[in-house]
Length: 396
Image (tube, rainbow, N blue to C red; front, side, top):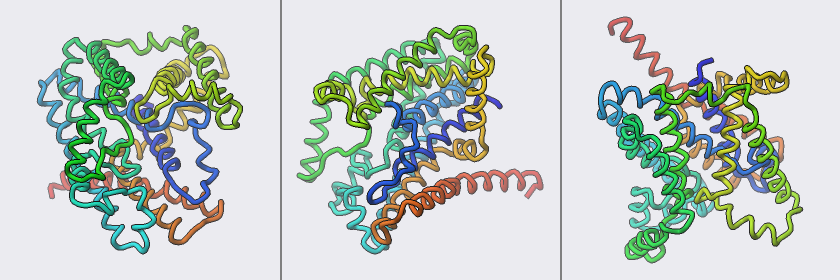
C-alpha cells in the first residue's frame, strides 16, 4: 500500500476514536475505555493534526516548487475558506436543531453556552472563532493554520524548513511560559465590553497546538522535495532509539495507570499536573507524542523489514488495520467528516437526554451505528466525483 494510503487509514482511525470519545451518555459507557489514550498521554486529536500538517507538506510542496507560490497558496486559502464555511454551517445547524428538537435548549445548554442563550455579541464572537461550542475543537484551528501555511511552506521549500520548525517550537514554548497571557487578557477585555458575560471559549490554544501541524508540514515538505531520507532515518537495523522510546512510553504508561487506579501519591500527582495541560499542549503531551510518533512511524516504515518475527507481525497488523477500506475512506474526507461528527455527537446527546438513559448494550449499538453514519459525507463526496467523471467521459 502506498504511504498516503496508510496516512488516510490513520486519519480514519483517529476520526473513529474521536467520535467514540466525544459521545456522551448518562453514566458513561465502557466502550470509550478501548482507546490508546487510556494507556498514556497521546490522544487522537494530536495524531489527526500531525497527519494533516504532514499531508499539506507532502501534497503542496512540490506543486509550489514547480509552479510558484500561488499555485500552492490559492488551493490552501480556498480550503481554509471552505473549512470556515463548514465550521459556521455546523454551528448554525446545531442552533437550528436546538430550536426544533424538544428540550434541546436544556440538554445542550452547557455545550452551547452563550451561543444558545446569549445575545448577538456571543454570535459575533462565534463567527470570529473566539467563542466555540463544545466539540467543535480542531476545525477552527485548521481555518487558521491553512490561512498561514502557504507562507511557511514557501520558507520550507526554499531551504528554511529548519527555521519553520524552530519558530514553531519557540511559539509553543512561549505559550508554556505564559508570554501569550497579556494578549489573551486583552482580547477578553474587548469581549467583555461587548457583553460582561462574554470571554474567549476555545478547546485548544491555537498558538500551542500549531507546533504539531507546522513541524509536520516542514517534515512533509522535506520528504516531498527528496531532502529527507525516510528509509535511512527509520532503518530496521538500527533499533536503539526506538527501544529507548518504547521504554519511555512504559514509564508514562505507569503514570497513566497509576492515576486511573488511584495509586499515585497526591504530592506526586500535584507536581505531575503542573506539566499536564491538554488545552495548551504542555510538555507531558508534547514529549509523549514525539516518542510515540517515532515508534509508530518506525513500526510502519521499518517494522516490515525488521529482523524479529514478532516485530514484523505487529507491523503487519498495523498495516492491516490502517489499510482497512472504511478507515481510508474516512481519512480521504476527514475534515468534512469531522464537521459531521459534531452534529452526530449533539444528536446522540439529545437522544440520551430526551429518550434515555440507555443500558450498556444500547449505548454500544448507538456508538456502532454512529460510526457507520460517519461515512455519509464520504459516500456523498465520492459519488459526486464519480458523477463528474462519468459526465466528462460521456461528454454530457
